[in-house]
Amino acid sequence: MEAIPPGGSATPAGPAALVVQSSGKTPTSKGGSWGAPTVFFGTSELVLVAHPDDEALGCSALLQRAQSPAVIFATDGAPAVERFWAAYGSRQAYAEVRRQEAKLASRAAGNTKIFFLSDVAGNSFVDQELFKNLMAAMAALRGPAGALGTSAILTHAYEGGHPDHDACSFLGHALGKDLMLPVWEMPLYHRDQEGVMRRQQFLCGSVEEFELQPTGEELERKRRMFDEYKSQHHAIRDFPLAPERFRPQPTYDYCRPPHPKTLNYEAWGWPMTGEQVSAAFGAYMRGGEALSA
Image (cartoon, rainbow, N blue to C red):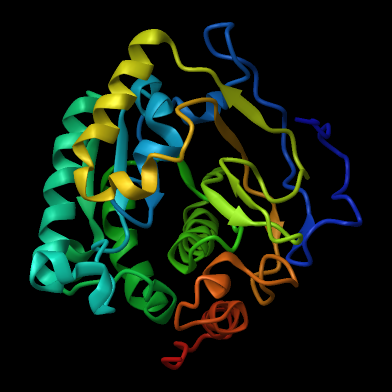
């Protein structure tokens, strides 16, 4: 991994959506064993993820080290398309399975509080459709973020792997701006511009990245978190346990897809395109809710 020092610029070959790197001081290490984002070890750390299991994949060890972490799941983890939930009988039943798995995984992590954004909003945010409900999601986020006394935000990178991940990236950016908080990001998966699937690697280097190498005890807890997500074993089995990667959220142009080639969810044939998702972000920034695609 090549680290670009603070004050550097994004590489010209980088994704179109990445315009400049995030500014600010370089964090120092915590504990001496890794370059940790020490800003994330404040009074209350908010982790905004799209689905139950995203926190286990991307930041399990970080959650274990954080002082007072709270995870907010932005969707219920159950898509509208029947093939995703057919084995469970209904979309609602599948969503409930994922909710219970998240509760069990949080116990394995140790000290993590969890919230479901659908509970705050009083309605379900359906998996794959968060980009259609940005205003409602942001309104629901402000309450717990304020009540928790949030000191820093961690969310998904804008990488085109899943539309909900990209929506969380946008919401994290907007929430950080509203509350004047530092925003960090983590990668999960994306298809690069050559069509190669990448897991837990940033789409493009632009700001200094930090790797967390979990201890033996942290790895054991992470394995236990993975084990609790039984409904997702088919998906998470291909993810490495280590390292975990983090960086300050760069400045993105959310009015454009993460990169100009085929995005991962487009390659999977899902019912949305990167242009539609980024158009929803643009509509929000102009003050209007995006129309359903």
